[in-house]
Length: 298
Ligand code: SF4
Image 1 (cartoon, rainbow, N blue to C red):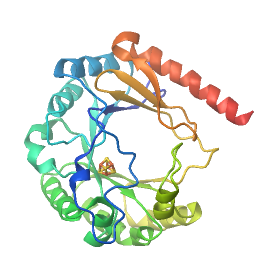
Image 2 (image 1 turned 180 degrees about the vertical axis):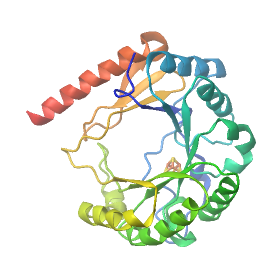
Image 3 (image 1 turned 90 degrees about the horizontal axis):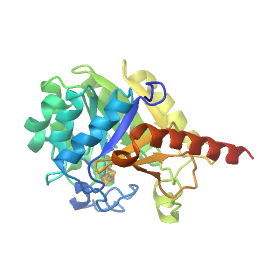
């Protein structure tokens, strides 16, 4: 059994694609979510398999939270989201739905009773900034999601991506989030900087890259503005940085992990938990990560 200290959070991926790609970019934008490592859907599964995958994670770990991520998990097709959320809560997980929220209101009735926390992406305090990142109409949809979730007293979190320009808008975004936190529970605010992890891309770096120190300072400047909300900063990753160990479970049973190498082009595929078991795969990841660290030191 993996203890809670070894693995507190598991990321579950029902699909790797995203519906935000359909939004139109604004006039000045380089394109919708160009910073994202977008992929076609790599997961093919069925409802029964999703339940078995969740059961296996539950049986072999003390992880308390299941993060539903993607791509975006709220898609315009049946990706078994409702079944997965319901099952995850029934077996005792808290659930965190990471979403762009574009289809949240449409699928809300089926989701509501099985989501512990909604983590909404927003990159600026107004339509001009936020839509530059994620497409026309995005900010309006974000505001309406916040409105109905707040009215329904749901628990929220926010997820923000920054550029050299938008990082200056963090104080205004902090005000917006502070206002929401006065009305409903807001658990955390995650603020990120472009991280070319193993996928160096000069064009993206030119658009999104800026000094790490400027980022850290800008985040520190807003920490006191959002009372009671934990703020996490993800600066650009230097080769020596070790990020917290994370495990992703695809809904077909595939387990992948970030082994900590900045040079790795993508997560390491460890195996299929329905065949190999969940705990053995994660233990293998621990060992591989240790090896990566040792090689980094050597
Ligand atoms: S909304 Fe999120 S998952 Fe979708 S393209 Fe944008 S950054 Fe990627």
